[in-house]
Length: 378
Image (tube, rainbow, N blue to C red; front, top):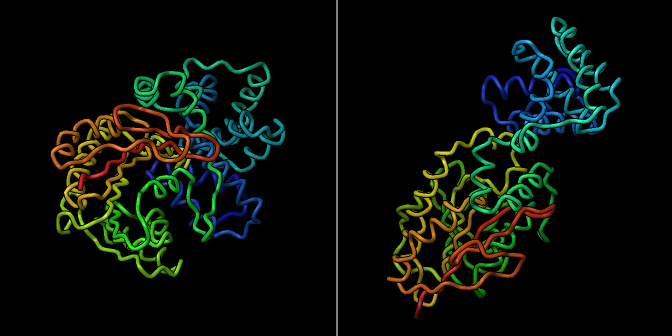
C-alpha cells in the first residue's frame, strides 16, 4: 500500500463505490498497511470520510464539466480533489497538482482538466440546485425528516450531521457520545437493582449502568455483537455485568423479573449519521418501516419483563417519527393494559416530539436521539 494519503483515499473510495465496502471498516485496515505519519493518516481519513459524506454535492460540482460518467478510479480522484478545493480550503494549485499525481496515469489528463474547472467555478461562487444536493443527502431523507420535524429543524439537523463527531470519554475512559450517556443516565435505579439492556451491543450503555452499581444483564441476538459487550466489560473490569445471546423479540427471561428494562433498539440511525460516512447512502426508505415493526415487537416483549413498580425505557438514535412517536403510539394500548404510566423527559435538553416521546437534536456534542420512559404500577 502506498504512503501517499491521496492514493490511499482514491483506492478506498473505489472499493466503497464498487464493492460496497464500509468506510469505517475498510480504511483502518488500509492505513494499517502503510507507514504514514499520523498527520497523513488523518488527512487520508478526512479525504475518505469527507468525500463519501459529501459525494452528492461533490459529484454535482464535477459532473457539470463531464460529457460522460468517468471510470471509478477517475471518479474517486475527482471527488477527493473537489473536496479539497471546496471544503478543506486547500490552495487550488496544490489540490489539483497533488490529486493529479495521485490519480492513475491514464486518467491524469481528465482529472487535471476537470479539477481546474471546478477550482475556477468555486472562486466565482457555487449554486446548488436543491438543498438535498447542497447538503449531500438522498432526497427521501430530507423530505422525511422535514415532514417529521419541520423543515427548519430538519435542515439544521442535517447540516450538523455533516460535521465530524467530537470524541468524548467517560470518567472510566470509555468513548461514548454524550447523548448515549444521557440515555443510560435516564434509566431509573438504585444500587443493587437488576436491569436488562435488551439490545446491548457494543455495550456502552450496559457498562454505564453497571458503573452505577446496578446489576446488569446485557443481551444481543448476534454472538459476535454479544462478544463486543464481553470485551468492553472485561476491559473496564466490571464484575456485575452478565452477557447473553438472545432474540429481543422473544427474550428468555421470566415475566416481571427486572427492576428496569432498557430497549435501545436497532434503528435507521438518522440521528447519528455523522458517525458513519456512508450510512446515508445505504439506508433505504423501506428500511424505516421494517425497523419500526421490529422496534414495536421488541418493546412489547420488553414490557412484560418489568416488575410492578419498575421502569421501561425506549430509545433510538434516529429522528424519524415512525421509529419514535409511531412505535410508542402502536404499543400504548399494550402498555396501558400492563399498568404503565409515562414519565416526563429525563435530564438534558430534550424537546417534545409527540405523545410521551422526547427528542435530542444533533449539536456539536450530541447525536440525535429519541426517548420515551414509563413506570409500571405497583
